[in-house]
Amino acid sequence: MPTNHTSPYLPFGDQRTAAWYGKDIISVKQFTRSDLEYVFGVAHEMRGMVARVGTFDLLKGKILANLFYEPSTRTSSSFTAAMERLGGSVIPINEVRYSSVSKGESLPDTVRTLECYADVIVLRHPETGSAAIAAEAASKPLINAGDGIGEHPTQALLDTFTIFEELGAGQVDGMTVTMLGDLKYGRTVHSLARLLSLFRVKINYVSPEILRLPKEVLDEVDAKRIPQAEYRSLEQVLPETDVLYVTRVQKERFEDPADYEKVKGAYVIDPEIMKAAKKEMIVMHPLPRVGEISVDFDDDPRAAYFRQMEYGLYVRMALLAMVLGKA
Ligand code: CP
Picture 1 (tube, rainbow, N blue to C red):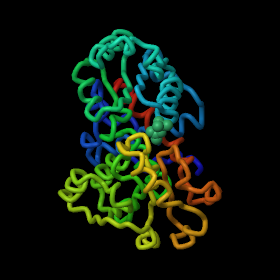
Picture 2: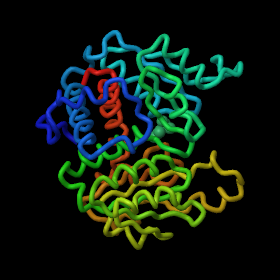
Picture 3: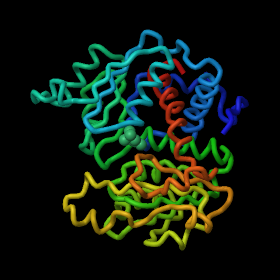
């Protein structure tokens, strides 16, 4: 998609910058609809700046500690790229077994250590609630990059930004979003369902019985009076879908490997299946994929998942600038 330099969002430099200075980003529940307009306005400007000049010195002299206790390609490298494109630098800790964590250092002590050297901490950790615990220990801003099966708020922000940029900022109200696959363990869908409930959307959930969205998330969306329904078959809802959000079955989170064998490969998106979908819609995926979207579909203009990764760079640039008071 070409960069649109006429922003459909709020003006860059809006007074809400101050509201995010020094703040942690732990959950999408922290964001209002107006906050999203602000974040996406800044991200849109970042997109334009990267296209025009590549790298600039907004965060020159600032340091990010990128602390990952779980594997990551996109989140880790896009936060690194975001900081470096803004002129800052990064302490990368992607292999915690080579850090003092392997000697038994606690998470609170580890973040207390890193904030002596860095201005902001990005954390991915396998335990739900770990980001909140770490943020409590830290006095510098901490950004949750995924806590177990809990939340992945920056992913939900970039997902929603993708929808805005691809389908139009004014088009989200009235859309039908269908989430497909592992809705139990997929933290990205937990965050995205919560965030989309700020809009007048309809949400369909398609999953095997054992991978249904947690009741807690369904109840939260219900409380916002968002129409939502669960299905086992995609065919029922594909023709009405504006955004198809596909997820990987998260093998690493199953207690019983036999259960994984029962549901792996339950849904595969390919050109044949997509004949039933609208011409103007998008297919998204947080990635990595392991077969749930056929590579034969990659050249279809509706395949937005590679563009989605790039939007993540701009959203993470915006978030870093906001919490460091420079947006
Ligand atoms: N989408 C996502 O979180 O990807 P990574 O696990 O590669 O960071």
